[in-house]
Image (cartoon, rainbow, N blue to C red; front, side, top):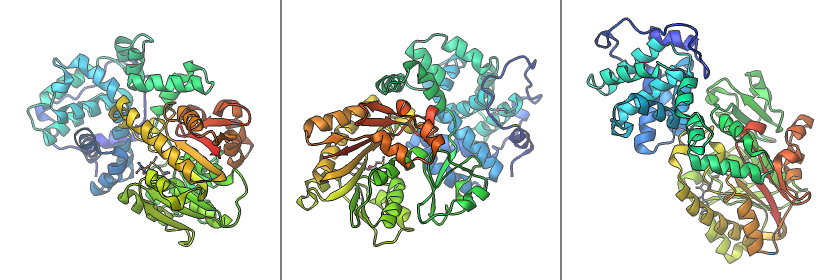
Length: 504
Ligand SMILES: C[S@@+](CC[C@H](N)C(=O)[O-])C[C@H]1O[C@@H](n2cnc3c(N)ncnc32)[C@H](O)[C@@H]1O
């Protein structure tokens, strides 16, 4: 159970980006640091533990947070607070470090990591949540006392008091007043190379490059939970009764902003799945791009953890096709099997292999009617969901990934039946991973042609609303009848999924 201070602030939880100073003097605790609480409250402790695991053990926040919430026995309110605190802090890490750099009398990298992480959590509460200053200060100092020791708590107290001397807007004005990439990188908490990649992609896809700030802002907003009731298997009605809203974009899909996915009807048994609506549309577009002939054989080349495979297998079950779901990782293949457990087991098989090796196997030559290559990528299109990834990814990753992507594309072409369909998908808008991969594979294999990907996506979208949201001019790049699709978090409220439909 949370203490009184944390209850106060739970009632006023929320973002407050542009908080002004006009409300008068900020309130501080009357207590001297030594008289304040010595225990960390469970929600903040949870956020601190996650931050520590992310910054010291390369953990993924979205994977470990739910377990930690359960282990620390957080109630619903505390779980929501811990989630916002963890994700919000991780997303804005670059900005907060720049602010802390002005408040600490040494390079912040020289601070002990637990102290730096606690400070980051403190800054998020002070500048970006409706937490009263005294609560943010007292609880952060208590956290440091309990988790690190009494020594650094004085430093934490002094540094956070300096942070409170300005609002977020004032800090940004001071640290990033201009429009250089460096300033924008601090203002929007994106590394410069990612900022440039997004601008370049907007231009490639015919959008105004100045829209980049909309994309960056969208990347900084916690996404709603997207759900799908697997076609022919799941039931959306109880999900809507539970409080989710029907999606305007995709069929059998809903959007939920209420928190814990595990309690949503159908999620525990696997018939309803959490999945980005952009992802749903790409899987559906491959299955729906043309009529399915009875007995078609489909391949998902890199299926782990099985989100799109589950959609494809459900559709295969309805339409008389079969699916082979492959992944290079044994662990991720187990997750695929879990995802597919609700589909008739005669419809699907799994395999563990490098996609390149599948392509080299003569038994697979021109074997598949439809192939999904949802390629391993930088994931720059899913920054909303993977809050730490923007700080962890480097431009060097790109070289390795693009090489792998082109090898996997070559393998996919080798396995595609003449006249078959190949969907190349990434959750990255970075053109080296998207449009350039597609144009390169067509150069290497002149028999490969690009199809009308926009129509494939539009035709599986839900209704007119969706069609207008997915207007051709907002999603396509390329000619009328051969084009590629880029979805954007600011326009479509999806991950920045890329989709190109190819044939040979
Ligand atoms: C973007 S994820 C796929 C997500 C999945 N389609 C879904 O919707 O849940 C990429 C996957 O590619 C797998 N992978 C990486 N290298 C591979 C390779 N050489 N061959 C096959 N799979 C590979 C990774 O293990 C990872 O599961």
